[in-house]
Amino acid sequence: MLYMSNYSLPTVPSSLKVKLRLSTTEQLKASKTRQIIESKKLNTVCQEAACPNLAHCWSEGTATFMILGKQCTRRCGFCNIKTGRPSPLDPQEPENLAQAVFEMKLRHIVITSVDRDDLKDCGSTHFAQVIKRVREKNPLTRIEVLIPDFKARIENLERIWQAGPEIINHNIETVPSLYRSICPQSNYKNSLHVLELSKQAKFITKSGLILGLGESFEECQELISDLADSGVSILTIGQYLRPSSKHSPLKAYIPLNQFAALKEYAIDRGIGYVESGPLVRSSYHAKESFENYYNQIKLANK
Ligand code: SF4
Ligand code: SF4
Image (cartoon, rainbow, N blue to C red; front, side):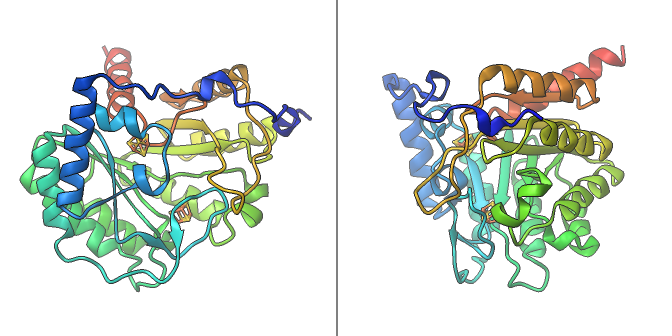
């Protein structure tokens, strides 16, 4: 069996080195993005998860908004989002986010959230309100939601479906054998179920996998097959970067040819569009991923 963790650790590969120098125009755009986000008291996963692409995405005027507060009720070993007692929901959040999308002139938006297992509806009512308000104020904006598993409860999922986003993303994150150690409060089968049900409800579905936590190549292939069987259309595969020594250990930097091999495997298994590479994150190039997927479908149906 080929173990990805057999690959060496010591030096950061050049593929993970991010261009930090921005042009004056890019700096201005990034600071405008920051100013809009801060003035509306919004949270972004770009900041909270210490995403390595922040400078790049913000300079292009894109960000991934994180709703339902800053504290997650779960504790996943790879994740930089804080765990703790969550704050009350902000009733202004739907309006503020809709206004930010309007000011940023976004044509494709990604909205995600922390997990709110403390709430009876897991935050699904508030999440749906945000989608609806963004839609009302920005009718031409495509809405991608990166949702928690909502405990895989159908009534929670139905609220999201009824709000009418275009794309439903739910990250599978890692292989089943690592769930207990990496994301102990989550459940692999629940996550697949969320994707399967959303597909049956006629949504375009998307998922994401992070590598470098100790998974084997074969396990990744099995996971990809499960996603394909669940009808997932878009897949992102990226490299885990350990946010601090308190987080799950980084077991390996995955070589580029392994990212390419998994991408090829996913496409062979019928997943429509795959972004696979060290810096890929679930919302990285989200607009382009969707448009590439959509163009492929159009071409195939000609
Ligand atoms: S990849 Fe996603 S989370 Fe990271 S900076 Fe870009 S939009 Fe934000
Ligand atoms: S459930 Fe999501 S936001 Fe919460 S700790 Fe896990 S990965 Fe992070």
